Image (cartoon, rainbow, N blue to C red; front, side, top):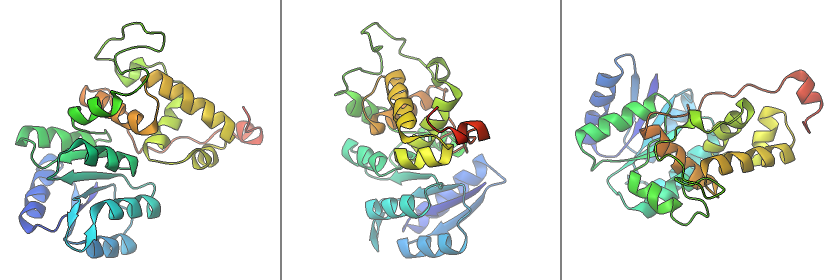
Length: 244
């Protein structure tokens, strides 16, 4: 596993590197102490499995860099690790395509658990951010579409998603728009819209950001979806008739 750490504090870089290597001895951890260094590393070696990005960098706005990385390297998962822990920053990062948000202020146990989760393909967001972002949804995470009570510990496996809906959710979590998802899965945009609507209904949310946060909540509960696995393309027959 290849991990890129982006942080302008040497002690944080060394500490995070040591922690990651203790969790995954085979991991190759690269370090960048600035946005410029991160850009240079990725330009020459883009095949990383994960980027851990600090928002507070001396030479760039972390939000701007996050958006840039998601645009240039859409298949590369980026998880924000920041000293800030307010819900607005968390939700903004998810809006920009981050696959998770880990606070540096978390306890060692929480930080370790969060890193294990994201390194194995899960999504981690602070619980308070999840509650805040989903509070305005017409259907909360704990209630089904028809208003019946839903088990609070529901997992992704219990949502009843079809394999294709799971593929759509995987790409949706990567921040990809419907047109890109349709192209990658060799399906029509209208079909993708139907799948996205079904996924949002299953999660009990209204927006893509809420979907990411909902999956993050489920990840913490142990039912995570590998957010950056590569979905299978549709069969040649399906590709020839993309409306299906």
